[in-house]
Image 1 (cartoon, rainbow, N blue to C red):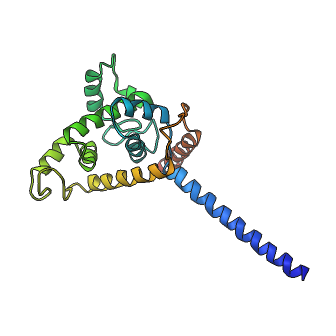
Image 2 (tube, one colour):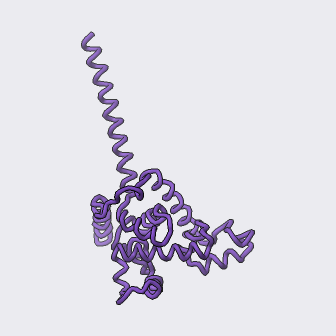
Image 3 (cartoon, rainbow, N blue to C red):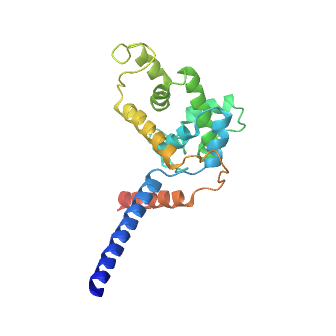
Length: 218
């Protein structure tokens, strides 16, 4: 009898261990794929420019995975992948003295410009999120052109299709990220906000960089 009880307890223990491992793996999956850092800066500038902080958090994740040193093939830089042209324009509009494109790697300046630019797009496209995201990725000129084309818009106010595959995927990806961030980080921008950089994000991005360099130079 004691043998049967012991065997049963062992099975229950193993069961709960596997449950715990599964929950930890799920937690790590979301923390690695949907990280959050720079909350104080996101809150500060999303408030200043009246944009949704979860939109900013989602865009940063899709654009750079919270890697402040990220640079694209098109030379877009930093957390929100601001292009040098947009950075120069923003520096003039926001009266940023002695602006240099290297400054776009600074998290605060990058997030400030990104929030400002999204506020401009919000005004231009009447706060229509899919249009704002399409413009952030492909440029507002292209979005305006698509809205005037019956192949892509029925009413001139929304898009039924996006001809650029990358932009179409980008819009869907950011919208999905926004939904996930709202669930994972509910009330994150309401209460006291951490001012320091998320060390786990730093570790993951540095690890990715090491692996990438190893593959390139192998």
